[in-house]
Length: 110
Length: 120
Image (cartoon, rainbow over all chains, first blue to last red; front, side):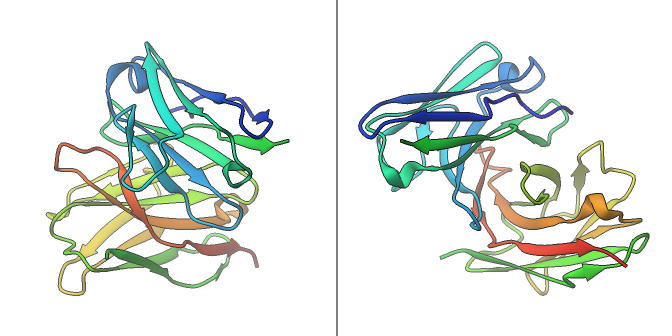
């Protein structure tokens, strides 16, 4: 199974909105509603932010939202804040009953 | 509050077997599925595989020939063995709770991770 494709980096100024894409195939992203997004700060474990394409994990900020169209899922961060600077990974359930992660996107707050 | 803690040797010699254990507290290991994920230095996350409460497993095809995941329900632990390791297996290894077999397919709780280096 090949990693899902994400842009290597995305940047934005405080208060702006940014969107991270996650492209897979019909055997993963396109075939299931089970796309999730994880935030990872340096030296820390990944933290679940979004599950089932667009559902926010309990307690997480409503500035994070998810969507999907065909084989591509997206994570949008609105009202960008300094604390949002981190690596972000998408993940999808696959036809092999396992998961596959995206290549990861480094978000920089300018 | 559910917590996961990885443990095991931080250094493994090439060609030997890497062995890690994940201890689950605050939840019964007989409830959900349990996964292993790894992250090489400076690189992205790679899914290794999972085990469920009954001992059924499924592995990433790229690692399948070298991976074994097992569960010890009496100790509320599950384990990872990776054989014939090389320097490419150097990574931070995470264990995580997978909410299957409920209607939710994602990993919601992760351990802090443990670093394993492969070197002679």
